[in-house]
Length: 85
Image (tube, rainbow, N blue to C red; front, side, top):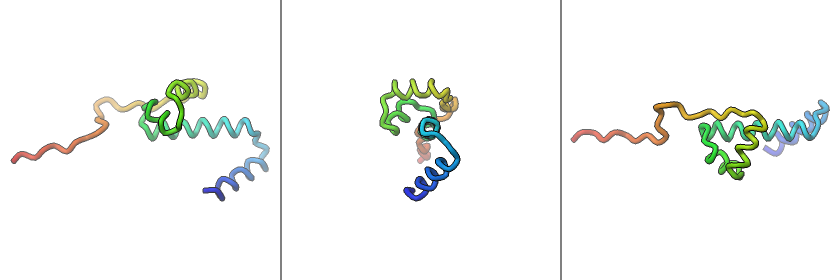
């Protein structure tokens, strides 16, 4: 992973990408991925990122990220039905 990151940084510098732009884009994508991983659950995503939920909410608004909500009727933890004996 370190080698990939080094290559990416070198490529960004060669293309004239500024630090602030890179930081903003990385943060936006990192938050977006955490929200996708947690299926839109802000509390869970905040825990994954090591952020307070309010901080994550502020950043979601700042970057205009639309968290993917859980689909209606989809259970979070499905249990196998008990078979009739």
